[in-house]
Length: 410
Image 1 (cartoon, rainbow, N blue to C red):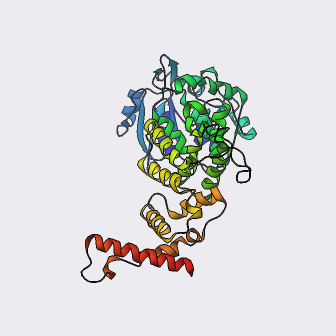
Image 2: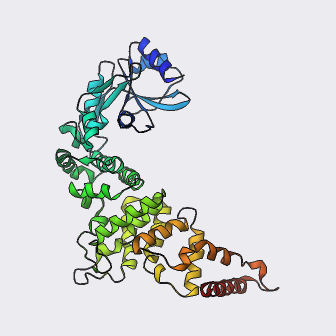
């Protein structure tokens, strides 16, 4: 069934099909939009189920059907109203029936640029709140005072500002501030979801800057907030404190790779500086060791994927040592470790982080692939006859270290 056929069947049954939200926004921005969100108006879910018997009902709080349109399984929701009756994202009384209009549905959304609908059959645009004007002005504004009722909207705004490159209006900043108390009780997976999307953007620093301006950074990401004001030696860090440096590194890594794991590792590389005492500043002795403890503590709350934690821990441990390594044994150990972790933190991404942090790479990282191939060319099958067990491991290690030492001399 094509989209047009689907819309015609809905019309013939007495309803109207709309596309709403981000797809319409991106279309108006001249982008190639993805992931259509469909809304049906003027039709009950019972009549919809009769018209489309193959559709699968998946919504719990409100009716949402899965329908195959143009060969793709799409979510089709029904226009709805919401009333705040509790806390958090579950604290809503939701009404969805055939008498609710598209205007009613758009009013409950977050920002003006996301509250635009397009009627499928006619292409008519419904823009009640100046969304197209705000797209042209590249600014995010709230629809109404109800913005703060779903606290995670504040996170979504910060993420949208990051992805779209839009400014956030002062009115919206004020509305975001109103989300602080309820955000403290939000499930970690909702916060992680928005963080992940922000780190996948080309300039993730915007996400944290918007949260800082709305006084939510300390609430949501205290480990990042703690970097603010942690001064550093100016000769090495003319960009400012540990927070500014971290934002700079995160942006540089994001510009170098599409791997969100690497961007996260860049974000946390100096996280140990957040616990440096005032008396020690501007120096941050042992911040690598402290950083591992901070990341571990953060993970208890955030429940990051294991690959994120392993990559972050490696970068925290090695980001200061790696540029200065000269001993063949240490270099061999790191090269083999990077090779082992390459499925989720490719060595080139590790190098992106080190370069973003220090400005340049040592020879052995610049030519990582060459040295790795030298080391891996030596395997246990080359050992003298009779060498087994621990002796075999020792032989292999010594051979690789000597090969590394020779490579460094050449």
